[in-house]
Image (cartoon, rainbow, N blue to C red; front, side):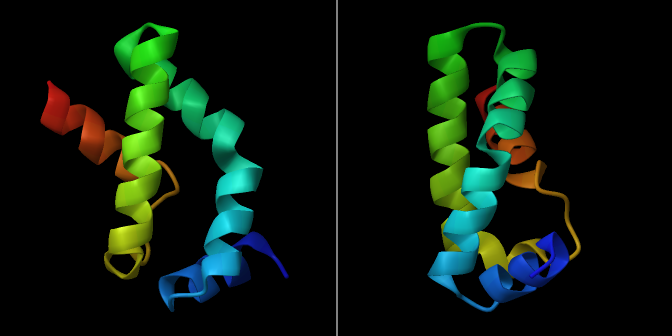
Length: 78
C-alpha cells in the first residue's frame, strides 16, 4: 500500500495502518516536535501526546497532514 492508502485505512479505524504510519513517520514527527519546543524531553512529551490524540481523532484529520496532531498539541501548550 502507498502512504495515502495507509492514511485512508487509518482514518477508517484500522489500527495496523495507524501503527504503520506512526512507525514510518516517528522520526519526522519527533523532528517537528523538537523544532517547536527546543528540547528532547518536551519534544518526546509532545510527540507522545500527539500520537495518542491522533489515534483518538484520526477520522477528523482527513485531508490534513501527518503533522496536524503535533501542531495542535503544541498550540495548546503555548
